[in-house]
Image (cartoon, rainbow, N blue to C red; front, side, top):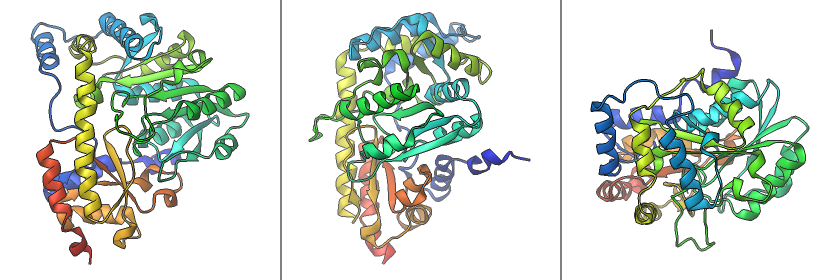
Length: 389
């Protein structure tokens, strides 16, 4: 019999909508995975490792070359001084998050997080028997109210879970916002777990001058922050599930204590390949953001033409829309109908909220697809008004 705390987490919206897209032949703009492979050099390195015998358990902390490459990456792009000995390789960022919550939280401890949120956050908090204290991010900018943020903290706050650039909204937290979060974390003695997997997906034309600011780069935050990222999003290898976490040794040790009894280790042939890929030239990283920016614009323009309200996306590869202008009162019900209506799949934002009313009419689309796929999706969405009339 399933325990009570996990009964609302028996399935993920991504699996459900992807299955629906497959069943109906719809274009899947719901689940956030690219439809192209990563750099050829990365794939060739991994293949060579497999045929070369790199197929057994890697070291518990992860392959040394990858831990060093992560540290060098953090210095190169963010100016952070990271000791490779304080880097832990995980089975994707999802496991790093789970390890952090399970390793740091006792039953009844509180976790401050921002809603809408990636669905594994809520599930992991439930696994730990902890209590979530959500802070609302509201359109059009998906910023938070500082008073609501402060009200979410208490003497039981153990962790603050931050995600920037933010999934699902596409918001990029500013240095001022992150400073507010960090000051409250310090005041209440909390650890910040910072999920930064979309760190290289920030768009240059954002009118607010968006840029990725690592939480650990802010004054006084390195000693209380666990920074998490992964290879899946940056290198379009989401199925490899190789992530990492770094921070103060005592915090990383807490993550490792839980992580080693989740997967123990994984990704032996992939880890050294990713270590090499992290050293790719700046043009690779800037090209990634530039390409996604064009895809964002292609899809966003099509969604507006189809009658959606489209909110700005400053980062990630997601765009959030409002279906209310189409006369649709429920985004979740709409997403279940959309594949049959026009042959496109998306995900409702309400499933990422503790308060479903917060995202009742909001729908997320992923634009990490080939241009021809996005163009076909836009063509199909053009018939939506007639389909729902």
